[in-house]
Image (cartoon, rainbow, N blue to C red; front, side):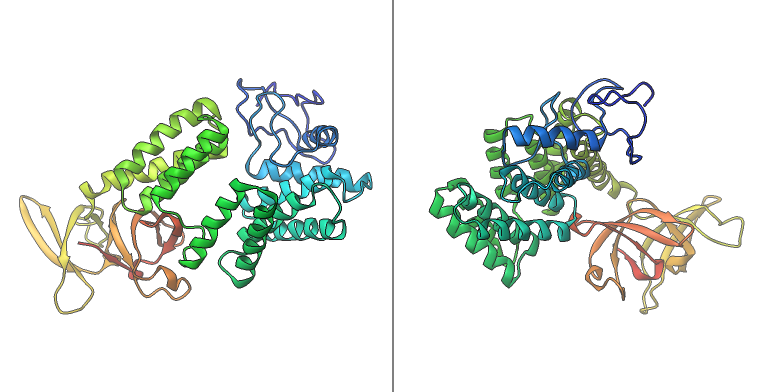
Length: 387
């Protein structure tokens, strides 16, 4: 924005590499809290050398941990600085940065990068077993590797090794987390939690990080998503709305967690309101008396033709006729089921809701009742209306 400058170098223009000013924290004011990624990397590199510490780095102004793509970019920039300085890889600042990149890469869906840095961290500490912090680094790297590999033979192996190391060094909190991950692997539900498990996770996060910490708001977001997945829309909406108000105040409206809560609240609100107009459609016809007129889908026509009985009230009369799904436009919120998909077979028989119609691609954007499935563009003939 106009008047914004980097709080580290005080420059208003992009840095030497063209990097623009960014902000992803709870600093207030239209022009405050902005910085270049390169400046943040330089600043955090010096701080970490002075006081090596595992974990995410915080904004030095508002003390909020950086998150998302910005956190990953800062950590990656910091590693580049250490490499240019030819810092010994066994240095705790170097190892801490590798683990930081691993954590950030998972949340930013850059898992191949995370796997690479976790493996590098493991190679370093295994080559230097006498380092005082080698056990802690190995536990974190193995746990991160297990998270990335998921419910696979190699992923479970990493988690079991991390569990054994954590138990040996007395890292009881980490032991509990890994045991929960292993239980989910055994049940074939890796990384999928129930709402009761997410409530406990939220309590633990508030106890460790405070009710207004970024991690606590992330836990609220995950709890609301889980409740939505379980069909508890009203409760999910209550959690999401409450969390959104707090996140706007504490993290700021531009923060990735706040934006995630905003999108989830919109989706949940839509799910709650949609049934009122679920089967209203707009006709597509060469007849000007019918084209773009509102009508209602009554039922599926008999005979297995795939057509629907549509009711249109015009001139005081209730006219009914058969039409296939391409002869009318579905309203936002219409409940549908996907059928006959070839390139996304995992979505067949999944229930979703119409979000919009993409005129250019002539497909409906469908948001699925199971939020983990995301959204998809689907041709009209691959949809069946739920009546």
